[in-house]
Length: 296
Image 1 (tube, rainbow, N blue to C red):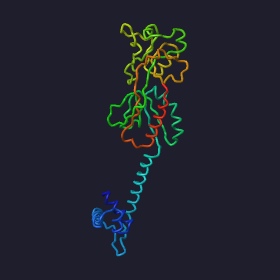
Image 2: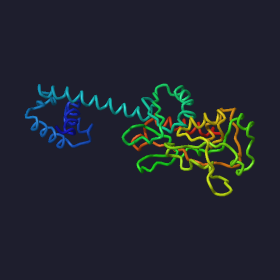
Image 3: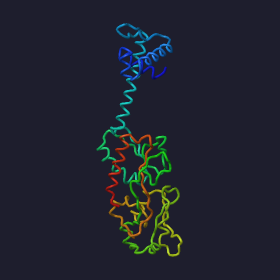
Image 4: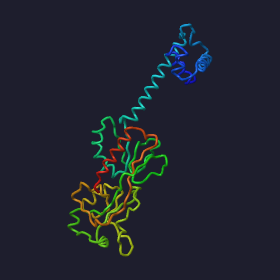
């Protein structure tokens, strides 16, 4: 059954005549009449009885009108839902980001976001694997590089800077390095096998400022940024850490502060299909506001 014919039939029934329906539909009476006749031919039944006072539904017409009314009402409900979806921040929002950023910086800020947006349910997936946003494995992502996919909307939100850190205890026992060359005398911790893929300079601390251009040796390697942080806190040695990780770590000391390590761009990413969804826009604006307070 042709959807346009069903809509015309519904409008004619509500209007009570072709003349009134013509005004509502902005179609000529002859065009409306042809559509109704075609619909009656398809259904092999009469839908209206023509009287001087107007159109009267037949039994078949009543059945079709009842069905059409339900269908059109449901469609209007869906249209309303979509309209609210664009303007009212509500529903489930699946967010993915890398382990360190998600666990240390983002998670503590979700409560504030939920307090401001109680109708949004947040599911946070922290993983160093990039989920497929086009198949809705997640709705939005915060990644440490710009996406390669052309059909994603992305906005750079902040630079993630790395510096060298050590625990107060370690620095008291081994002294503070005054120059990059002094790193040759210190215990260094780096990423090992299976470390996060966004990191392109995993052994920067082993190479920077080395006199003979040879890599220093690390005393410990780990594949997880949490373990790297805990190793530094426990006094194993020095490591390059993102500044946001140590913001609330008074027991850690920045060493050689004039020498920055690797820098990565954090990007807020979501598919084109969600560009008008209110909960996505609301979360994006919240994140942009929070990173504007960034003091690292």
